[in-house]
Amino acid sequence: MKIAVASGKGGTGKSTFSVALALANRDRARLVDCDVEEPNAHLFLRGGESTSTPVWASVPEVDASLCDACGKCTSFCQYNALALAGSAGLMVFPELCHDCGGCILVCPNKALSERKVLRGTIESRVIDGTLELVTGRLEVGSPSAPTVIRAAIENPPALRRRVTIFDAPPGTACSFASCVHQADHCVLVTDPTPFGLHDLDLAIEAIQGMSKPFSVVINRSNGDDDLASRHCRRRGIPVLMRIPERREIAECYSNGGSLLDADPSMGERLRALLDDLHFHVSGGPIL
Amino acid sequence: MKIAFPATGTDLSCLLDGRFGRAPRFLVVDSETNSYQTIENDGNADASQGAGIQSAQAVIAAGATAVVSVHFGPKAFQVFEKAGIKTLQADIAPISDLMDKFRQGVLPRMQGPDKAGHAG
Image 1 (cartoon, each protein chain N blue to C red):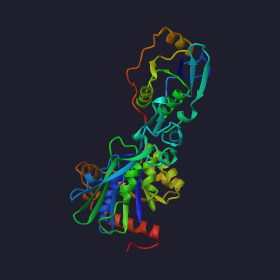
Image 2 (image 1 turned 60 degrees about the vertical axis):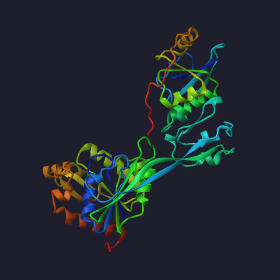
Image 3 (image 1 turned 90 degrees about the horizontal axis):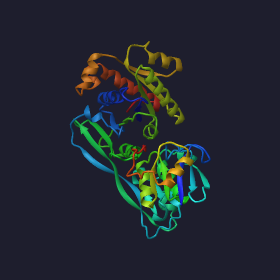
Image 4 (image 1 turned 180 degrees about the vertical axis):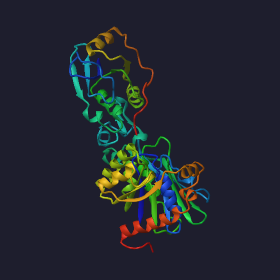
């Protein structure tokens, strides 16, 4: 089973929740940090030897002696990564290229060839011999977060676990979609603020477009009558859990501690939560 | 010679558009006859990325040898530089007035892009 932990709005507690969920279920779950623009789960899950794998992409390179400036590649490219500079010929902007390879296919003169560029790296670590953390990291200046997200998700597991948790990127654009798309269920973490709820609704709209089942975790909750709880009740959205607004949790977080360090009783609840999710997704217990 | 202007309207009395890549259209004016050609820019104005590059390509394909704009982004500037197109800077004004200034040779040359890219 694959679970994406997403939010829409940034800073709602996706990593807080997914790190705690992974820690509490380390015998049966692994964690993939898909927030490749600014991965942060590793700040809370330290130790273990790291294995690093580069993520390559192919961008076009032009052989000016073969190019007759027909413009087939420039009109094909949906990302505007190629342009004809009049008689000076074809220009390539690799930083805009999304690695589809179409320009090379449509070139009638075989003037374009593939050149490899580094898009990011995947780091894999096993913490204390039991919890696997995979971290995708986008190369600075690279446009294609989804390429690196897919590579992180497809990275061969170091440990056999029945559940994989994706710590999804914020927002509701390509990065978010490429992560959530590969999950069986999406947990949306929100906070009880108007901004949090606004972006929660955007995320729900995107998820419904992908026909994915989802549920909500309310972070920094003031109880079952806070803004987010009322919002979810009104819209008939299932709330899996409320993480209370408490100073100890914030203090623990700011020292690099997890939710479980702040409140050890969370462990049991997070195990039960994963059981429930698995039952919901697969119709049976995690074996 | 032909000079391109990002344009808010469809004739020479209209104002220069404050944007380059995302301008609604370009007017390409012949400096000898004062006749002009309109290039609609709808596709590029709404592009998620690379609007400046494609707009530059369109303007070059129309035969312009100089372009007048308030701003130039880094990639559009690169395309013009490679193609040997003169990039001239102007404030927002009616295009007919800017043509006069062009003929007087008082529009300053851009030394480099004055806007950061918007891609991503």
